[in-house]
Each structure stands twice: as C-alpha cells, then as structure tokens.
Image 1 (cartoon, rainbow, N blue to C red):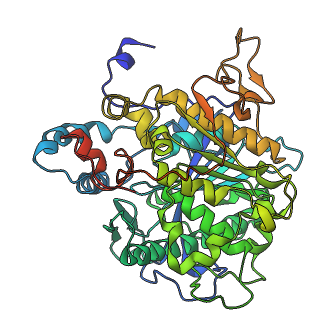
Image 2 (cartoon, rainbow, N blue to C red):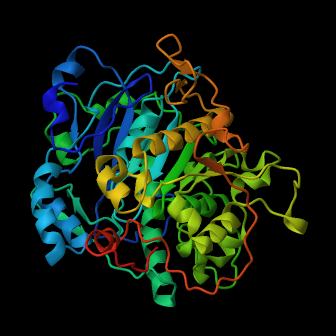
Length: 519
C-alpha cells in the first residue's frame, strides 16, 4: 500500500475475498412494464417505478478494466442524499460541526465494483448463477449493505438489493418514465419505535409497500432472465453507452426452479423477508378473523411457485416489533415454511449483533419467530431448528457498510471491535447455509476461515464446517445460541439497544450518549 493510500482520509471498503470480480448495475423499471403477483391496487400509486441494484460476478479483463472500478456509495444527487442523512440523524448544534466536514469525504467513497461490467459465464452445473434478494433496514438503501452483498457476489451469487420507497430510507429519488417530469422525492417517514396501535398500522403500511416492491422486483428478475425488453430509467444507466446491460442476464439466472432464490435482510429488512416469504407460502384460502393480509399473491403467479420450504432465509439482526401487529397475528402464528418438511431449520439462519443479543425482549421474540413448532403443532419433532449466532463485540451497524466505513464510530461509541472480521463471519455463515441447501457457491477463502497455516498454497476451502458448529470455541468470538426463551421477568424497562440504525439514535450517542428508545 502506498503512502497516499495510507494517509487518504476518505473512508474505503476492504476488498472482496471471493474468487470472482464483482460488477454492479443500477436498475429502475417502470411498474407499467411489470406484473404484480398481488392483484390489489398498488399501495404507492404515486411511485411509477421500482428500483434495485444488482451485484454479480463479472469479467475483469479488457474493456471492464478500461472502464475503471468504483460506483459512488452516495448516489446522485449527492448533495440531496447527504442533506437527507443529516436530517435523518437529527443534525443539530452539536453535530453540525462534524457534519460540515464529513460530507466532503462522503462524496468520494466508492463501492469497489465494476459498473455495468459484462457478466461472467456461470461455471455451475445449471449454467446459471444463484440469486438472492436482500432487503435493507431503516435508514438503509440499495447501497448501504454493499460490502455484505458484494462479498456474496464475489462468491458467485447474483444479489438483488431493492431500494424501498416506503419512507424507511433517508430519501429516495424516483426517475419517472417520462423524462420531462422532475424527479419525484420520497422523504423519510418518522414513525415511533414503541408498540402502539398507530405504530403497528404505520409499519404495516410500510411493509405493504415493501412486499409489493419485492413481488414486482421478482417479476423483473424473471423477465431479465427470459431476455424480455425492459426500460431502465436509472440515472446511472442513462449515462452508459452501448447495448442494454440488462440483456446480459438473459439465460444466466437460476430463478425458475422452485426454491432456487434465497431471501435475506437486515433489521426491518429481515422483517420484510419473513412477512414476504410467509405471505406467499401461507396464502389464506379463507378469511381469518382479524387478519388483514399485507400481500396476497395469485395462485398462478411465479413467486408462488418459487417460494417453498426449501427456500433459504437469512436474517441479520431481526427487529421483531412489526411482526407483533394485531392485523397479521394469524400469519405470526404460522411457523416458518421450512418447518413443514423434515429438513426443518437447516435452511434458516439468524445472525444477531451482540447489541441485539443483549436486547432480551427482542431476542425472545426473534426466537419465537424462527423456532421449530413443538407439542401438538409439531409434525416432525426430530427436525433440526434454525442456525442462530452472534459475534462478540458487534453493534447493529456492524452488519451494514457503516461498520467498515466508520470503524471509529462503532468502536468508540458502541464498543464494537473488528468490523471487517464481523462481516466476514456473517458472510461465511450465509455461504455455508446456502451450500447446505444445495446452492452452488464458490469456496470460502482460507484466510477468511482463519485456518492455521493458511497461505498461498491453501487459497480456498469448499466446506466451512466450523462456522455453523454449536461447539463452544469453534470460531473465536462466534457464539451459537439455542431457541429456548427466557421467561424470567425483568424489573427494568427495556428501550432496546442504543445503537440501532434508526432516526437520531446514532446522533444521540455521538453528541451526548443519551439513550433513545428504539427499534
């Protein structure tokens, strides 16, 4: 590393450690060109597009290198996005001085991917790349988890990262199909983080939008694989020259076999994944008292054929409050789809931060949500339960890009350590669950696995047995959990972890350490 890189104050990402170079494409498609699995009216009719970023294994030679590497982490218009983040964090007197300097650095942060690069030919038996949909949390975006999803892409997974327009991002900009119209703005929606009738209703409405988007994006990905023409009105795509980059996905995505797509998310995104998968799998054939479904796909829709008990579900720091909504209590009572077969929770992974592990009420709700059925509700009493882990000294931000970009915040403020290693542990566990589910992904990097004697002679390992082991000490500072619920009543009132990535919480710690109620 040269002296200029060492003294460069601009935050930067670690390199991806998988065997493939990573390409990225910004996609925004008019909803008029897509078919929603849910025939009900759109929950956000004023937003005429759905947006997502694709991370995928790409070629790294010739023209790709000439194009250069890097996509701006803060998308265009950057000034607007940075201002929105300042408002999201509640920037006031104490924070304004810090924030007057940081934006100059934020402008230049780049995601280490090749923009619009040619997709690599899949070396898999199916001659198609496996696909994952990854839903962001509150305060997130299609770019905010680029290191996790980019790391997965470097191991041979095409990751679709939606940009949810439900008011959970600091701001969204919608490029209308009619280029003469100005950009539409979707501002952040302030919703309290304590349980109440009003909060449940507002979170349900956000989830209704998110599930509708997930259904449309699934339809877009299927159409991309079929080679059907779709307009891409994303700003980044408009600047590209040449053929339509969407055409390179034709015939290369494993999205038609039932159970072939995996679903992942962080925090509110993990809630989104659970509600999406269960809403599709348990489409009610009759009315249930008090149940108001958020998403009701038609039996004939392709998403219904896609989601099966074998669908891998990967949850990072699940925030369980929205699942408690009275409107969806019937869905809450149903087990995760994986438990309808003897294989049980082998395809279900939950990774917590230590902060969420210590948030006992949320931990108990998480365990209840993902545990296997017991007693008379258990059809397969000997089936395995889910994989649950947490890395010691990790914060809620550790599972997003913020942990590796701003380690001084997660270390000094939240007590988190080794942010890059924490993300590697997350990726290792996700990859191994996918391998166990029959998904063809690349070998894990031997250095990432911290194997003794790992060197250039041992570059990768095809099976990462230790990362899913429940044996204490199999992996340093990586703790396996059971699903037993702590029924002891606490005398103190819990407000949740003080480092959750929601409005004002990060700021509260930065400028005075005041705990806020959260997630």
